[in-house]
Image (cartoon, rainbow, N blue to C red; front, side, top):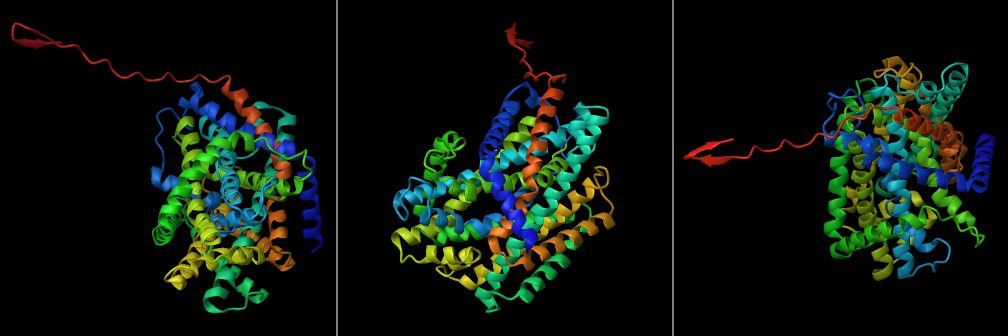
Length: 490
């Protein structure tokens, strides 16, 4: 309890004092990613010039999406838009059509390009130095590649240590939130105790046994299969809500929220509300999310770098940043839009339930649909699979980080880190601090890693400035044919 209290206080202080640093850094990462993609550097491959991708595009996208935020979409898909509808950003009137529209814009800000820009930059740095320059996939590699000697090794060691802490705490906090959601779903469907610590530990125990299976296999098998299964079930669940819900409204909501997001993204990327004195909202929501994604950047960055070998910088940036962001916008338009439709045009009441217990949001929404029990069981299964994929991927990455960047760390090392993550999750749940403590634990490692990530990006650009960029291949010029004396000649 004391640790949780101090971690929460420390993260609150950092977010209040250095909000401008975090927001400006993330915005800079996005701009730099797009610059690299559309500049001459976009032709550089993350690997040898003749190297082909290890995984197909569909499996590749499924794995990076599942590792990046899968379970979070289920947890917040209904809850976050309704939170912002009831308690909107500064200068918005709660529970109005304008608040509903603003709610989706802000939600997309938290789950769109900014999140995936952090992941893309983290993965790009490691993929470039790992597969282009031959360094191990470690947080220290970019720094040691540019700063040789004792200074580089000392800073590199600190970078690796901070990265391990950020990954372990980030996954532990996120698994804790997932366990809470599974518990809420089981209470809704099966009537199990909603506030039983024994139940939470039981769910965590089953989860541990399940995710240790893919941890024991090679990356290309266990995690790839789980990721593809995740995406298939997610699409079926989303299509069910889309076509049995207010379909026309939801499609209109998607188009409108996409347009609003594109229109306002530049403004929102630099907004902190310093004049209104209402900085708490930004700290609780936007800054917490940005730091959360940075906490996951060492993990997701290593993972997507590992599965992206052989792809060009241009392909990597566009696919990693744009495709998952577009899907997230559609997801929130469907699930969040359905919740907002109930509040604006239906019987209402869902938003107040969400404010009471965020973990029940998705299951409360299912109560308005046919086969609600089947939907709830499907969602529980999906959260479980997503958490298993994230935990297995996290154990894999932690194994890489602690074996000198090995692309296939020993099974014992992966099992060890799987057990460490489980123990950390159990300790967090035992604090009983709820969502606030879980989020603080999850982002605690990201505060120092932000500095490391800025240093990594600086090293990437310094190294790229010395790079010999391959020439763009021109299409062959067709031979001109002329007819002479009845014969065709080139």
